[in-house]
Length: 105
Image (cartoon, rainbow, N blue to C red; front, side, top):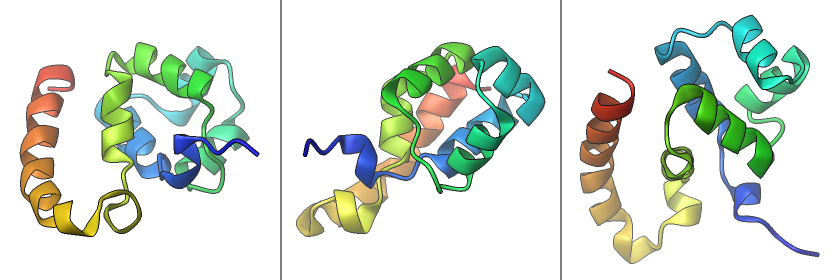
């Protein structure tokens, strides 16, 4: 069984926040992505993981690099080594803010 990096990450909140910051309603988003509203709701509530293809489409639609979604979806206790967590907590807000100012604001 092949395990994907996507299996351990929580994309729902990240996708929802970016969708809202970009001014998309759920209806607009699903129409442009050609997915069902049910599927988007499941993703945004972290009940279902998006596929890489869906993430790529969301990235293209929002004009935000795919790596940002992956970075924001990291779960510190699961995905960041214990000895690196303090560093992560220090640079995450700064890096997130810089990327958002460039791609969202």
